[in-house]
Every structure is written in structure tokens, then in C-alpha cells.
Image (tube, rainbow, N blue to C red; front, side):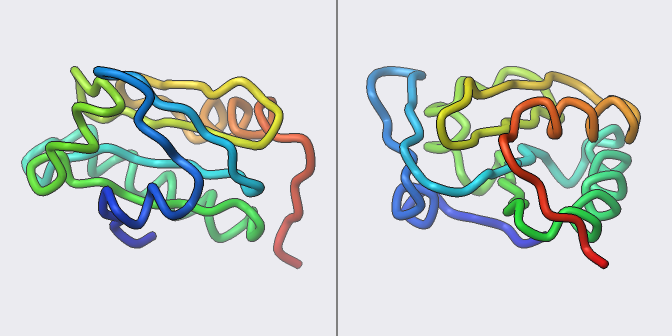
Amino acid sequence: MKNITTQQLILKGFTKTGKNEWSYDGEETYVIDFYADWCEPCKKMDTILSNISSVYTDIKFFRVNVEDESELSEMFNITSLPTIIIASKNNESKTIDGAVSQNKLESMILNNTSRIKMAV
């Protein structure tokens, strides 16, 4: 997974709609992991997300270091770490606060997306 900046995310269809509010009108499914280098639960989620991202190849996985991208952290109203945002076309976005198991995260991602392609 690679890190993403505010400008890169805006180019992908995310828009700040107000203070601590955003919308998504893109075509793809995104899973965005908000983390900090000092956060132990974030390191656990990084491993889990890396595993999931290697299986579901048509989902875009990105990371946001909250210390480097304070504007994004504010835009998404990040108040705890890790926080994971799942955004997909024609679906409600989901926010996951805190570390969860791989099975739970995978289930939440699958329940929030309309079509998933697995790696062969």
C-alpha cells in the first residue's frame, strides 16, 4: 500500500464539503488507512490491510500518515487511530475506528462494495 496526499485524493473523486465533511463521487472502491508511525494498533492493521490488498486487486488501498497530512485528517474528522474509511460508488461509506481482525475488516469491505475481483 502506498501513502496518499490531500491533492491526490481530491483528484480521485473525494471532495471536502464542509468542516470535517466529505463526499465521494468516484468510480472505484477505496480503503484508506489513517495511521501514525508510533501507533502499535496501526502497525497491526497495516499487516492486515496488506494481506487483504493482495487478494482484492480491483480495490484501491492507500495509507494516510496523520502527522504528515493534517488537512486530510481534519477533512475526514479522524479522532482515533487507526481509522479506516471504505468508500465506493453508489454505496454508503463506512468508517472503522480502531484495530479489527482481518475477517471482520474483510467482511466490512465486501459488504460495502458492489463488485469484487479476487486475485487468481
